[in-house]
Length: 114
Image (cartoon, rainbow, N blue to C red; front, side):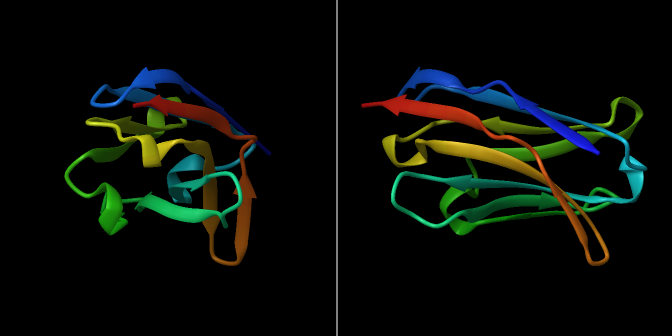
């Protein structure tokens, strides 16, 4: 199983980035996909989830700014991040979950300069 995240980088506050995470070795369409983030000195926190049928949930701190989506034909989950703030700076991880099994990607760094 492999989850390959990409799309991170350096962006100014107010800017946008789109993260992608491609899964392999799993029946992607079965999995709940999620994005987490971890900033320096803090615990990893849930950002957004998307179910196998497309239902979404967001952490309060990203509602209205971030959008999670998936393309099961491409085994890919996305995170569109708009109106980025300095506090969004973190390593972003994708996760695939099915029942009690969870797989993690390697993370992609997002840095937002103020």
